[in-house]
Image (cartoon, rainbow, N blue to C red; front, top):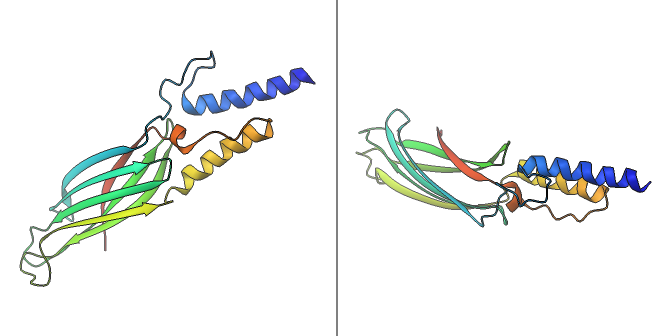
Length: 167
């Protein structure tokens, strides 16, 4: 019985370790997430055919919070630029969709708003795939009599953002 329980616990630890890229020789995780936040800045001038977009996103895995700041500039005389900044939260072998932040700038000749605008936003709890992953690892740990101590912070290895046209 003890051998079976020990093997079961070892198998669970191997699965968790593999998901984090950890060697089971007692070494500390080589690439396990340890940061309280991740920040990325990207710029593009190809959104909506030529709009300029610059976004900075900071993601806090512990609280599943994302802070966005997106600046959009429209070069068009009679057309606005509308863009979504999409957050992707990256694990060792998986990427989860995160928050989507809308921003826009009016046409150069539009008197109702500026052709360069900055939009900011805070988003909470927008990575359900990451939440499900952390819960499933903790469920496996609990089934084997271990503490549910796997965290979002341990699962996250980095972030990325991408721009898409918005309507």
